[in-house]
Structure formats: structure tokens, C-alpha cells
Amino acid sequence: MWDSIIITPFVNVLLYIYTIVGQNFGIAIILFTILIRLVTHPLTAQQVKGSKGMAALQSDKRWIEAQKKYKDDKEKLAQEQMALYKELGINPFASCLPTIIQFPIIIGLYQSVMLTLASSPIEMLNLTKHVYPGFLSISQLIPLNSKFLWMNLGLPERLHLSFLSFGIPVLAILVLITTYLQSKAMTPPSANPNDQSAQMSKMMNLYMPFLMFYLAFTFSSGLSLYFVTSNIVGILQYAALGMVDFKKMFSFPILKKKA
Amino acid sequence: MKNKLLIVIILIFTAVLFSGCTGTGVSSSWPGITAADDVIYTSYGSGVFAVNAQNGTLLWRYPEKATKSSFYAAPALTADGQLVVGDYTHILHVIDAKTGQGHEIFTAESKWIGESVVVDGTIYAANADGYLYAMDLNGNELWKYKTESLLWSNPLIIDSVVYQGGMDHFLYAIDASTGSLIWKTDCGGAIIGNLVNADGNIFLGTMANKAVAVSKADGKIIWQYTSGSAVWSGPAIREGNIYFGDLDGNFYALAEADQTVLWQYKANGAIVGTPLLLDDGIYITAEDGSLIHLDYTGKLLYSKPLAEKLYGTPVTVNGKLLIGTTNKDSILIMLDENGNQLWVLPQPK
Image (cartoon, rainbow over the protein chains, first blue to last red):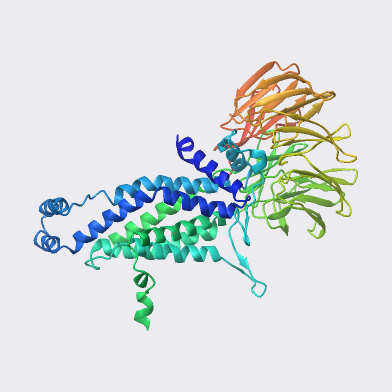
């Protein structure tokens, strides 16, 4: 079911793009990621609208007062919250529902990229099963050209420079930076930076880039290329929706404190 | 404290989710098997294993403890009792077949998927970096030949010529002593599986749905037969007839002389390995996990569900049938002449 609805169509579109861009798998991954992000843009827009509404609620005086007034009565606080949702026209599911819908698409995109980069016999057998025979010719597709710039997209990426004895994980570093920037762009400013959810977002924004760095450092560079593209497109989408304050996004409080 | 715990849980969940999606921990191949006298050597997952052919007892494993290495290609056994085997972490190993003590001799740029071949003390090994390497048993490179794409197929050495199939669709004939090209032929599709030498020709399968016969002398394509789907492995040949399967599960018996179809059999899963031809009939493994036994007229003698999935070529050991599996709990199954299970090698920990 998952395969036939998500993975197989994704693999075929990805491979189709690969054939029309001169068998360049790197370009195909970039274009495919952009395409999927554009198709799911209405969901992103809805999510942004929802989180803007939630941010507005956080700074609403009535909500701040209600939090103080009913801090020991959770039931009453919830009632007040629902009333404010109604009054301000906020749908509490508007920000999380699109994310939930997008999640399988993102996972599917990720799995298709991995499947297409088949670098072992069983992966290759799996790939042959996912190609529509009348649409694409497997004999023309294999071997997939997995070279992109200095990378082999099927292997973890390192840039080897003649004067260095080790390779630099350029893509993994880009993943780290773009993940951090995207999570900063995605996190709406909180009225009370000390509240629990703001603290949690802050910590997630710090830890998540390192997790993504580790994944990009360890797994195929095709996957890292997908991460970087997806992050950059995500930032641009948020910017187009008026969610990004570039000045704030590139400000680093830790550095400022030290200065 | 609660927040931190929640974040750690979310991060672990994300890591597990992504790792799961990349196939880490899932088998990426099936066991490569080499049998000699009473010992079976098999490469699978994290190691190379020596097994007593009589009772399936594990004699040794290399490396002694599981590491990051992942092995696929069957080990090549030299005349002086050494095993040569490559792994997915790009390293070629030499192992003492008696003791299981081994060491790394060479590192290439990519995975070793095809089996190495050792002739007169020279290792011929094809790597997924596109190079065919010739080296001595200490890993000193004698020559290397660059092809246009990945090499997954095994080299085949006949009369000082190395024949090598490539993912770039070419079959190469290379001088075994100098590494210079003698000829190369475009076979129309990626060559992934093994090559077969018979009757002055090289036989192979291609991902362009073809079984192909190429002249050893000059590389001319003698004939090609189009099947219903991709042909992963080279065919088996017996008494002027050719037998092979494709990834749609079609199994063909062709007359070598004019490639007429003598009969066909349809399996319930992809046929990946070369069929095993014995006096009592043909043995085929299919991806649905069944071992199929046919007679030479195409009549089904039995079809046994043996495993979750079967891919490799069955091997005979002292008249018994040995099957490599990708089961969660076993990697080798030994059968008697009637197809009854004798022993199983559990998945080593």
C-alpha cells in the first residue's frame, strides 16, 4: 500500500527527472525535492497560518492573564483557551495537521531517494520492482550515474584537498547549518521565552542540527543533498510566507554574549 | 529535566526512523558460498564463517567479533588454503582457511560485491569503483583496469584472459598478465551476475532482458535471446541446452544451436541465481523463498518453501544440496537428496 501509493510514484518521477536532465542524479534529487515542496506548499502555508495564530494567542493579554489566574485550575484554563481560540478564529489543529499530513510525504521522499541510490544487490532488485515498465526502461537507467560534483551520491561525502590528510564533510556541515537556520525560521517568536514550550523549541533547535549532521555524515551523500535542498527550500517557503526575519535568523545570541 | 528527556526521546525516535528508512540492519545481500571437501565457507552480513559440512557446526568466524564490515561475495579459496574475500567497507581480506585468522591486504574506493578469483597466486578482483584489480596475495597491485561504471560481476579467467562484465553494459576481455584490453563488447544492458564459459563462448545475462552469448575469440555477439524481464545471472549449460531465469520468475530452456524455446516454467518470484544442473534435474531458487526442482522436460518434481526469500545459486556439497538464505534466524540450509532438511546454520550473533 505504502509502496504503491507513495514510494513507486516518487521513484518513477525522480527517475523521470533524472532522464530528462541528462542523467544527473544530483540535479534530479534537487529538482524532485523542490517539486515535492512546491506541491505541498498549500499545507505549509496552512501550517504557517496556524502557528501565526498560536503566536498571536501567546501574546494576547487575556491569555497571559488567564494563565496567571487559573494556574492551579487546568480545566478552567482549558475552557478559557477554547473560548479565545473561538474568538480569535484559531483552529488549534491548523498548525499540526498539515505537519502530520506532510510527514509521510517527507518520509516517502527520503525513502525514494534511498531506494533509487541502490548500492547493493537486494537494493537493486527492489529498485527494479518499483520502476513502471511502460514508463521507464530499466536497461537504460542502470547503471545510475551517481556522480555529482566531487561526490558519489551513493557514499558518504568528503571533500579531499591535497594539503589535508582528511576529507571535509562539506555536505554534512551544510546540513547542520541549514537545519539550524530552518528550525530558527520555523519557530515563531514566543511572548514568554521562559515558558516550557519555548524552552523546548530552543533546545530542539540546538540538538536537531547535530542529529541531522550525524545522519548526513554517516549516510549516502544523496541523502545529505536532499536534506540541504529541503532545508533551503523550506527557509525560502517560510520567507515567502512572511515568517522569516533574516536579521534575527542570522543572529547568534551565544556569540553576542561572548562579545 | 522532563523537557530534556522528551527531547532525547524525540531525537532517538527520529534517528531510529531515518536509520530504518535507509535500510540499516536490513540484509543487503544473500550469502556467498564456497564449498571445499568437508568445510563450507560463507560470507554474509558481518562476517565470513567456516562450517562443518557434515553437521553444520560453526568452526570459526572472521572477524572474531562482529564489526562494521559487511560481506557479500563468496570467498575465493586458493590452492594453499587461503581465502580471499572483499567487504562492503571497501577492504579486501586474506584469511587462513584452517584457523580463520585473517588480515586486510588492500583497500579500494568502493564495495566489493563480485567474488574475487585467484589464479597462480594472483588475485583478480572487481570493485564497485569501476576498477578491475590484479594483485598478489599481499595486496601489492600488479595492474588495474578502469571501466566506465560499477563492477558487480565476478571476473572469469580462461587461458590468461580475464573476462569481466560491467554495469556500463560492456563485456571486457583483458590480458591477465598485463591488464591491457584485448576487446570489449557492448551487450546492450548492465551485466550484474556471473559469466559462464562453455563451448568457446561467454554466456551472460543483462538488465536489458537478454541472455547473450559472446565469442571468446573476438567478442562478437553470437546470439541474444530476449526474455520477459531482466536476466540477473548467467545461464547454466548442459548437453547443448541453455537454462536461465529472469526477474519476472520466467524460467527458460533453450536449444543452444538455434535458441528455440524448448519449454518454460513460471516461478512465483524473481529468479536471481544461476540454476544448478544435476543428473536428477534442475534446481532453482525463487524470491518467494521456494526451492524448485524440475526435470529436463520442464516437469515440476517439487517446489519447497524453504525461506522467506531465496536469491543465490544452490551449491552441491558431497552430494547434498546447500542453500543460502536471508532468513532472520538462519543463513544456510543443508538438504539431503530428497530435499529433506539435514541441518541449518543459525544467524551468527
